[in-house]
Length: 216
Ligand code: PRP
Ligand code: URA
Image (tube, rainbow, N blue to C red; front, side):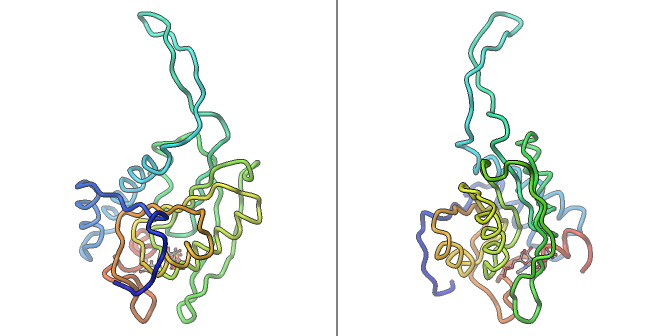
């Protein structure tokens, strides 16, 4: 495990047999893109369920075929899902399958293969982003550079509640996000050993974007 430190409370690693099972198939180099995309979709839905436990609700009356009773509905316009292009798009439908009413903001980032620094190439946010909880989604948290660039963009747009959902986290990436943004909580399906010389996560699953889009 990489020799880094961070506040353990900033990270939730999903501890569930279904997650472990799906992650193992996701990591397998022989898993084809169609299956890989399906697994990312399913894992993203499970993660979104965990990360939205405190979504604001309001009390409502509902009439069943039997009688009237009390229920809750989600408050409107409180959530935005923010995929980091391109690999984050692989998680989007999974997250929306549990919170279909969320608005979507898109951020384009590409990591330079040599420097590992993110290059930002696109941004489009929904109206009122500053008043929404933002779920930033990206399968891989490696150095943390792309996630931090996304968080910085959202902070500058006025967003206060930012949460980061990834499939695989490297300790280096968790530490980088936690050091710069201690209020941002991270959800991951796995916490891996660390980064190799090319800043790829070990054992990881390779290049998530390439595996989702079949561009390997
Ligand atoms: C990957 C991944 C993250 C980033 C993680 O994207 O999806 O966005 O790298 O690395 P970091 O934590 O060191 O920034 P990539 O830039 O390869 O682009 P892609 O999604 O288009 O494949
Ligand atoms: N981006 C990926 O897709 N995979 C890694 O392991 C690191 C960055």
